[in-house]
Structure formats: C-alpha cells, structure tokens
Length: 349
Image (tube, rainbow, N blue to C red; front, side):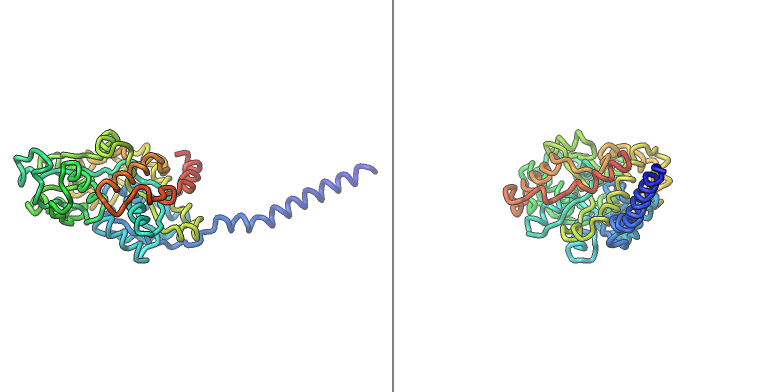
C-alpha cells in the first residue's frame, strides 16, 4: 500500500525527465545546424603541397561528411585568392596566415580558424642556366624573380631573402608564374633568373639540377634558420564578421581539415598518389613523392596555431613591409584556436 506512491513518483519523475530530454532534442540539433552549408572557398594554386590538407579533405569527402557543399575557386596565387575574399567573391580563403596581419594593418579584420601548415614550404632558388656563377644575394640585383603572384607568400619569402642580402624589392623585377606547370616552364625557358615557390615545383627543379636552392623553408629546421622561429603557412581564414555569424559552419570546416590532417599523419606514399588528382603530379610520380617526403613534417598535425608562430609571422612581415607596424597589430585578433581545438579533441589528432 505504501509503495505505490513511491513507484508513481519515480515513474512520473522518469517521465518528466524523458519529456524534458525530448523537448531539448530540437535545441541540440539547432546548435549543430550549419548557418551556411554552401561555401565558396578561394585558394591560390591548389595543386601545391601548401594546400594538401584541403585537397585531402575534399577528395576523401570530409567536407561532405560535415554537411558542407564546397565550391572551390582556384587562382594563380594566394594573393589573388585574397582579393577574392576581400572583394566578397568568396566566403573563406585557403591562404597564407600572414595575410590576416597585412589586412589588419589596413583596418580589415580577418581571422584564421584552422592551420594547415606549420612551415611555409617555400624554397628560393637561382637558375642554373641563367646564373651559373651565382655567389651572393647581391648578384640578384636587376634580375627577374618568379613568384606565384605579387603579394603572395612566395613573394614575402623572396622579399625577406632579398632584405637579408641588402636588396630592396625595387632592386628586382617580380614575375607572376603560378605554382605548377607555368612555373616550371618560366624557369626552364629562361624567362626568370630565380624563383621563390612551393613544392612539388621546387623539388622537381632541384633534383634535375635546374636551380640552386639558397633559402629553404620546406622543413622545420630550415624555417627556423630563415625566420628565427616557427612560421605558420596556409590556413583557412575568413572575415571576423563571417566567423561570428557562422560559428557552426566554421566548426564544420575546421573538422574537415583536422580530419584530413589526422589522415595525413599515417598516410603512405601510395595513399597520397591514389588520393590527389593526377594533374597534381606534374607528369612525374616519383618526383612528386620525393617532394612530399621533403615537406611532410611541415604539415600541421592538429590545425592549432602556435602563439609563437603567429609572433614570428608578424615580425617577418614587419621586417620588409613598412605598412605593418608590430605595435599597431593586435595579434590575438588574427587567429582563433577555438574551432581547431574542438576538432582536435573529436578526431584525437
């Protein structure tokens, strides 16, 4: 007789909890609903290893798994991709982190939200054909330097190398050559005297003895030697306004990239060859894989931006760009690790 009320109370308490949980389900779903599922993404030379995590995540369907429909527009270099996002033609850019710094110096607030590379993967080499007697940076005065596009990460690297050798950007001519077959052709035909570019292009030229590498950031050690510390490379970045209005979408984008980074940690050469488009191999699978092995350690492990790396990028940019003043830049506003950390925890990257 006395037990029935207790059973009833427990029953009703359980029913109430179940009802509350059921009512909460729509709210939980709403938290993960993408604000914007169809995304336009700008990238500058997607065949380069600089953007390999993006390629892997796309090819393996990781963006689709997050409910995203990605439309990728490929440009000749990351400076052109930058113009696309600033002009409103793209929602998100896959490009060099330092662009968020240079944009802030012009009062345009953009933010990186997942890192793809922890070293720039850019090498600077002089043409063995045009400059067989090269001895020092001063020999480059008056010469033509190939970069993916003016204002790109490869251009920044070239400026830094020149500055350390006592030359200014105005002492040379920069020629846009892209990041793939066009770059190879420009150097081999003698149109340029030196080149700052990414892999697989630079390794292909180096292994055939067509360039002499004089500055190299394809490894962590080489990056520290050039920049004096860790230097971030490609990332996904967007306007602060876009990130604030589309946090679930940005989280989904970060999830897809970190998922790709996790896959890359254990992927073998055969896995890479099977996954990237054939055209990315530039007609030489063996050299493509040699290039991959050279830059492998420069790929981010978990998408998280190290604070020290961001500081290195600011210092490097300010060393040759008078428009960038260290004391005027709020570095904390150029990147956020909130999305990458959540993705890292999810995929145990």
